Length: 252
Image 1 (cartoon, one colour):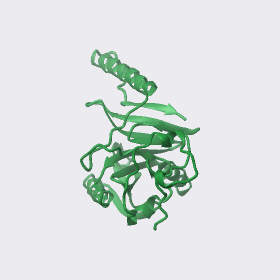
Image 2 (tube, rainbow, N blue to C red):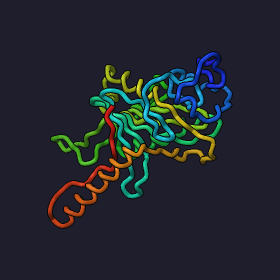
Image 3 (spheres, rainbow, N blue to C red):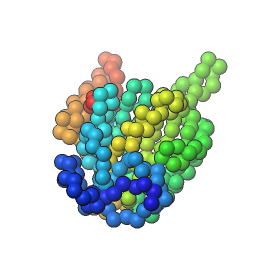
Image 4 (cartoon, rainbow, N blue to C red):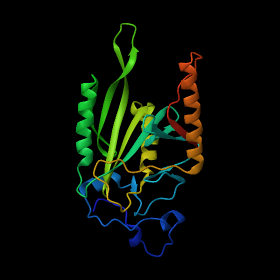
């Protein structure tokens, strides 16, 4: 009805790709008005997904290509993976997959909460009709940065998101793709190519779906955490050094 792609089980006369063969049982969901916003992606794992190179990160599969850097975001206090950031040139897109109820509308609720958060921080925000439906375009204060007159400086940010079958994929765009039209299309295409793997396990709505990493990235994260710990210890001992950022990355 809204140009939504067919489920894998609905395809005929075509062999599954290796990625398709490992997919969960197709999610049986009625068409929703929100589906028109992801007619070309992001995708659910049970749907007919265009073939591009992707890295499997558990709940999401993100595209990999030349010039696209994949960073795994880790909360330093809990050591838990809280998102994935895709960097392309001077633009960055952080994505987070959340569980959602069968009924749509969670992204709308999230937008309201994000709007309040930006305003409470002293920022400016407005609603905008983007390629994925309603999004927020904001100017968010940057802590510790002021101009010569002492006024608070801010950065432009786009909050985008889509409601899928029992999931919501939220994205935060920073850098040129948040401000320059010529850079927006490239990052929007990256967002479209993401595949969400909701799984069959029950997950409370709004909970972050589990993001996992391949062994090679896990090893890189462990080494980075070790260096960060050593740097922190050196700083405490008065020997200088800088702390780590809690992440790992892979170049496409």
